[in-house]
Image (cartoon, rainbow, N blue to C red; front, side, top):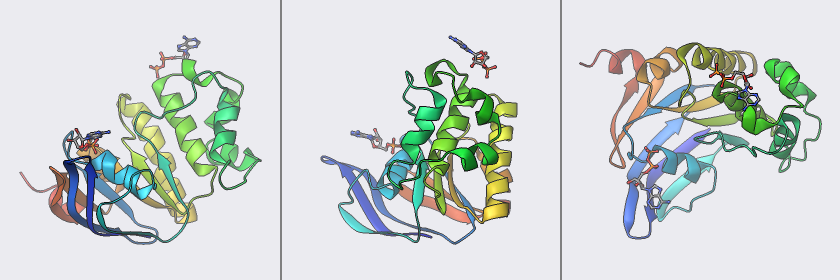
Amino acid sequence: MIDVRDLVVSYGTATALEHVTLNVGKGEMVALLGPNGAGKSTLANTLAGLLKPVSGTVEIGGRLALIPEGRQLFPDLSVADNLALGGWRSGERDPSFVYDLLPRLTSLARRQAGVLSGGEQQMVAFGRAMMSRPSVLVVDELSLGLAPNVTADLADHLAELNRSQGLTVLLIEQNARLAFDLCQRAYVLEAGRVGAEGACADLAEDP
Ligand code: ADP
Ligand code: ADP
C-alpha cells in the first residue's frame, strides 16, 4: 500500500531524507522509529503529498490519510466541524460512521476543539482522518504528550480498525515500546537514512 523507493527530500539545501526505501503491505501495521530530527515527519508529509521529493518514487495503493504531528485541529471550531473538514476532499458529509468507530467523539461533538484534553484532541484528529475513509493511515506521533493510559486507548482503536477493516497503518513513534506492541515490522530512521529494519520481535531484542 505504501511503496517508497530511493526517496530524497530536501528543505532548500538541507537534505532531510537520503535514499529512503520502505514499504508497507496491505493490512500491515508498520512502525517508523527514530530520534528527533531523523526525518520522520518529512516522510509523513511527503507520503501525504505535502512535500515534493527531489528524487525517488512514492506509490500509495489507496486513499491515504494523515494524523499530523501535534493534531493540528482548528481550535476555535467544534469537534463536529473539525470532523466535517476531514471529509472535504472525499466529499463525505455524514460523520455518523466516525462516531460509530470512535464512540467517545459523540459526546464531544459540540465542544470547541481547542479546549479539549490532549487525548481528546488526538481522538478528534483520528476521527478527522477516518472521515476520508482511508485504506492507509499514517499516524505521526500518536503518543506525543499523552499519558500512557490515554495512548493505550487510542492504540486499541487503531488495532481494532486494523483487525476489522484491514486498515493499513504506518505508525511514526518516539515510543518504541508502543510501536513494538502494535506493529509487526519497523524501520528505524537515523539522520535521514534507514538505519535498521526488521520484525519488531527481532528489533526489540537489540540492546
Ligand atoms: P522528525 O520528524 O524525525 O523529528 P523532521 O522530518 O521533522 O524529523 O526533520 C528532519 C530534518 O529536517 C531536521 O534536520 C529538521 O531540522 C529539518 N526540517 C524539518 N522541517 C523543516 C523545514 N520546514 N525547513 C527546514 N528544515 C526542516
Ligand atoms: P487530561 O486528564 O487528559 O490531561 P485535562 O485535565 O486537560 O485532561 O482535561 C480534563 C477535561 O477538562 C477534559 O474533558 C477537557 O476537555 C476539559 N477541559 C480542559 N481544559 C478546558 C478549558 N480550558 N475549558 C473547558 N474545558 C476544559
